[in-house]
Length: 124
Image (cartoon, rainbow, N blue to C red; front, side, top):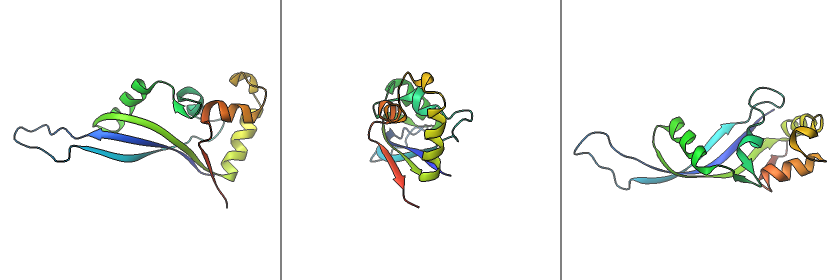
């Protein structure tokens, strides 16, 4: 069972030693964050950080990303939750068991509300 969140990140290198420079000084990359197993601590990451397939508080998330990378982050954009079928089934079961937490009537409503259409399932 595997899943990970994917983000597009633009960051800037700022050398801390005088007389040192880099060119280019801005880069684009992909950032991957493992998705916690449904029902375990951290599994509600999508609910707490995403809305309709977008980061709900970009400035806050950019700061968290800067802390994780140790670099100046210019932008972060959510791209997808990449998952296998087993993780997705377990996630759906966990959501279904407590729809009230999500203020929703169905699992598909929850997935759309937070992930938008950015859900990529690996066929296994």
